Structures are given as C-alpha cells and as structure tokens.
Image (cartoon, rainbow, N blue to C red):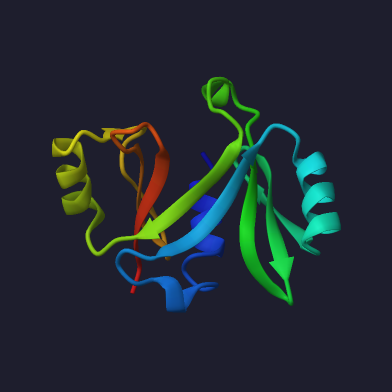
Length: 141
C-alpha cells in the first residue's frame, strides 16, 4: 500500500495531538472510485482535496479548514482485488512490534510485514480476531 507516503505526509506532522498510545491518529478511505468518493464527501461534508504522488498513483488528502483530516487510497493494484472498500483507521501505539506480538498471541493476523516509514513511524496492518482491519503505528517522536 501507499502507507509510506500517507503516513509521512500526515501522521508525522498533521495530527500531533493524537499521537498518544491507544488513540486514533489517521483515517483513510480505501476505494475503487476515488472521483465518486471525492464528489460525495465534498458535497456532504465540505471537504476539499489535494493530491500527492505515490508509488501506486495519486494519493488524495481530504482537507477541512486548511488541515488534512483523512486520506483516500485507490485500490487499483492486483494485490487489493480482495480488499473491500471501507475506512482504515490508524491507531498510535507505544511499541508496534511488542503490541503486534501480543495481538498475534490474542488471535490477530498480520496482513503484511511490519514496515517503517521515514520521518513518520513503524506501521503494522492487521486484522483483529473478529476480522476487522486496523493499522497500528508507532509514530516518530
């Protein structure tokens, strides 16, 4: 995924007050039709959007009152064929490696290897025992 670009641009600087263990620090819409999503959220919530390049194409940030509030990730790569559209939330955690070890023992499944994002943090994408997806991140302090 493009979490590398997303987190570098967002979590490291755009939500510093929410980078506390156990608090959500970023939300991202996974969609196959980003233009439809942009129209919907612009018309109903009042979001504006800016774009940035990413390895998978263009990543969109939702902007409200001049600040990034969410991201839009387009599910275009074949790796995402089985991924349903929906919102992915990022939780800040104090030590992603230690927390993932506990999560695995408690029945979670790691969806991809834990990875580092320069200037942002260390990220794990997993499913909890009930099957819900969630991203955990230890932000750079």
